[in-house]
Length: 399
Ligand code: MN
Image (cartoon, rainbow, N blue to C red):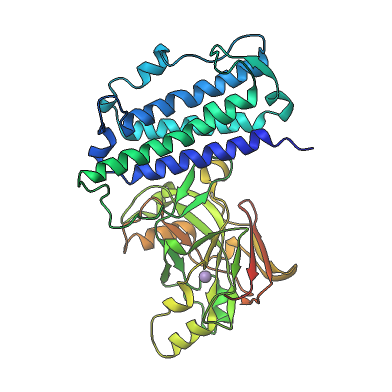
């Protein structure tokens, strides 16, 4: 019987915190500190309260598990609890929000490590209303349920503010969260901005596409950051094509802004690397080329930028050689080596930054080795780059 209480509570805590902070992110500054009435908390009071009680109730659960004969809990007049919600208007909302995120991440890790048997340990509460309770009561009601309860309070404040006739948002509709890639071994994610792609950067691939390899200068096309999809996803066979191709690529994640970057300094702008798939509607790309039209429709489409988790260059350095390969349904399709890149990572960054102000969050798909080819609904794509990682994509039926 697997332990489920801890992991389930951790997931519920993360979801509740995400929901609350997504609401708060939409609010104009005056609403954050606005008090609906003298005895009603502002959104800022709620945030400061949540930041204080997440570690508190996590620690109380630990006490109930480790020292079940001690009493746990506190009254509403507890000085720490009150101090947390005193003079909150002068605090920085970004600090408080970051504090909540960190507290929730730490707490969720702790919760997922507790077994069902540990969480069943009973301990007496100082609050006579509760009496003897199992540790999971503290987690479910006083920690996680408590965050969920305060989501409602934030929404009530927003509703009341709107009754005054004041705008509750700077937006006519809610802007989406940025697309974001996972980072190996880290809870934080990498927010994706633009996706630049290098064309024909391996000589053998240039030849298979009917071109003489050209070392003069790299050329580029782009994909919208919104077209990112995480490795491991299942995506429908793309619309409007009957010849969708795979292209496995080394992807560079930019971590520091720069313009006209010197090649010798270029690698200092790299946050890390990933394995990518530049999915391509080859028939639409070819038709556009034939008519001397832009090829966006062949390259820049939904879920066309597949990306593995990022690995920071601080951990793996800057790979300049190593196998890059892709299999479809287990059969080898692409097999190359990073050392065959005609324009290496530093050269691409230096060149691209002549034309764009590179920004932290930009991605660069560096081009694909030979062996590109069609995929079909139901196919499973799996690839890898030595020292960087693996990538997978499952193609579903067309929509
Ligand atoms: Mn490509």
